[in-house]
Image (cartoon, rainbow, N blue to C red; front, side, top):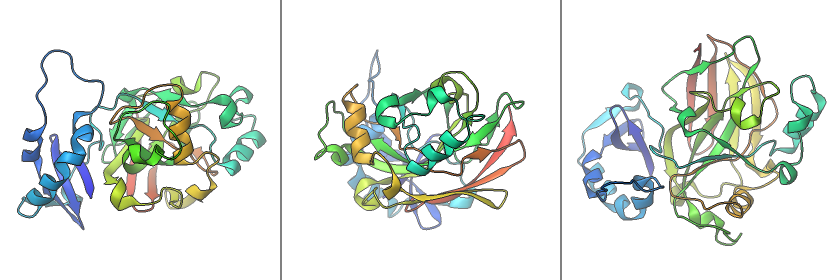
Length: 285
């Protein structure tokens, strides 16, 4: 199932070239008083809600995909966990360009660990990326993204993928410079997610997924997730050995070689196999 949030916080099921509005299903979510939970309530409830969503979609009003403003497919992620230099060829690329990639940040992922991005950096694919510090280089990074569906800590390799609710497309926008990685990557709009989440049961094996990106029609990045240094399963094990993962947490799996700059006025055409191909505009903040 392809699940999206769209327009004014509507809940949708994507079928072909239409979005079916199943927003009334949200009435099934538990009501909270006082302090809200750490997790995303919709993602946590998906196993129970999906049958109702399928039923509702049969008679739900619909809109063309082309007429919809897609919001991020997760409304309230607790954290965005990201993997640096997780493709071998991208690591080699970074090592070969010391003028762009700081030596302090180019290490094996097992040594450098993962990093966190501010949840305030998240936008949907219908909105533009708004670059900050345009006197410096701002880069695109296309990634497969896993959305955690079940809480866990110290998750085993055998159980890792059972903690995934679904997968989506991600752009990890990056301002180059000497500051800490998470600081440079956490500007408003620097985490693009969407246009929808493909549930894990429909998506299948995350270990064989094509990812690609063009800028203004120029091919920049093209790879397959089988080239990841740490697989999606490995990343979940690694991340959960340091902190608990909660439903709605976003796991960005890393970008391949071909990382390059974008400027205001550019159009990025990003693709993740079995998810979608989207065009995302670039503007100045």
